[in-house]
Length: 363
Ligand SMILES: Cc1cc2nc3c(=O)[nH]c(=O)nc-3n(C[C@H](O)[C@H](O)[C@H](O)COP(=O)(O)O)c2cc1C
Image (cartoon, rainbow, N blue to C red):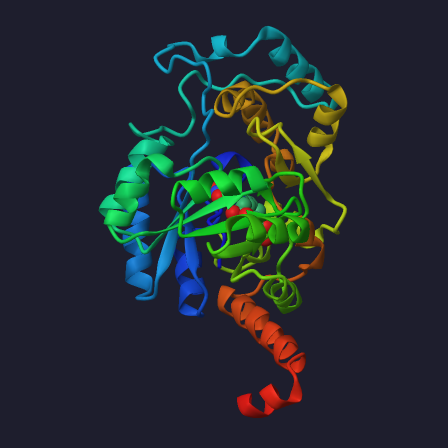
């Protein structure tokens, strides 16, 4: 399964997992999942239509449903800057100064004009339900409040979790499958390793099927998680280097160059723990001990930082979510080749380990 990856690099070019990438994975025999986060409801609908034009295979849409988005904020507040405590702005300014990057305030109006309803999960969820997409995946939070309508419209529901407690919570709300995402993963992530999490989630939610995520980018990885009881693998980082990935060049180049120790978890870019290819800004931020704000509010806190980086031509310091398995990736290839290689390698390993009698029958 292709992980429904949202935008990197401050959203310059939109989500990574667009219609082209999702359709390429579905056409190759995987399950392509559109990264819906970052799209306005109108754009999300257009992108779903595009997937349908590019494939007649099943596909999915992923959205982030964080419980504490803009926690404690009156959304009608006119001056968003007032939401950010002065000491945080001062701290961020000092960090940029230490990197010799001039502080340039972002225009009061966001540079990318947002449409009404943009970024709002409830409006995006209406599109998912109206379009009756085959699969819906929720990253962060629970799809609980939409579950009855999702199922009434024939939509298969997956939920990503990073610990057993959340696995039990989404299981209670009636999801059809659970993605157990280990800390190795790129993007928002928890603290438990993939294998340790996977086995414990399987035991906790049986008979609900469990999909493994975090650090899987080869047939060896897929075979390992299938052997551990997963029904499938959900892969993000592997597809960051797909030809069809909507990944800015600077970000993709770093993924190709990275080794296994080049990623780091930080709350800098979203307020929640997120694994990124590290960079001098992340290192300086982590060293500073500066606190972060709830998801949504943190976006506002770092708006001027993102604007300053762009003005200084330092796209290399923008968000670049990627997992530890980035160290194994060294070339850009079509998504279909990535899918086929993973499946063929896993099939070879799994058939080799079968007893001879079964092997003969398979032959
Ligand atoms: C660039 C990037 C963006 C991501 N965006 C999302 C997202 O919008 N929603 C989501 O549920 N997961 C997101 N993830 C996490 C993936 O869904 C997935 O769980 C993770 O990539 C799996 O681990 P791997 O990167 O080691 O393959 C993102 C991951 C990456 C690398």
